[in-house]
Image (cartoon, rainbow, N blue to C red):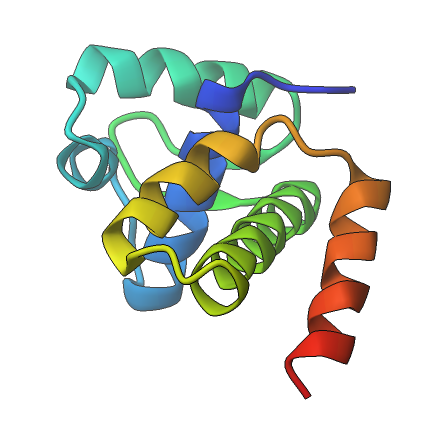
Length: 124
């Protein structure tokens, strides 16, 4: 089942926060993404209903195994694209970060794998 690019951004943000913090709350996500708490609540409810995360009402949240796998996949796509942009095309770091975030939602798994293989061969 596919999810929207917006929800993918939430998963990726939650993964990054989960790696840094012991407890993640709605406020942490809102602050990190520069969005409103109601927006985060809507996204969290959707992700919870799809089995990507667990959330204690008014409390902490965490990715489920399914959510962590999906978020890791998104983060990997992002990293591969950003590496290609910076190391192969010499795109400025900040621009590469922004554009990798846009591209990661549109690129397919096979293309990501091919790009990864290309980077492995090229950047040795």
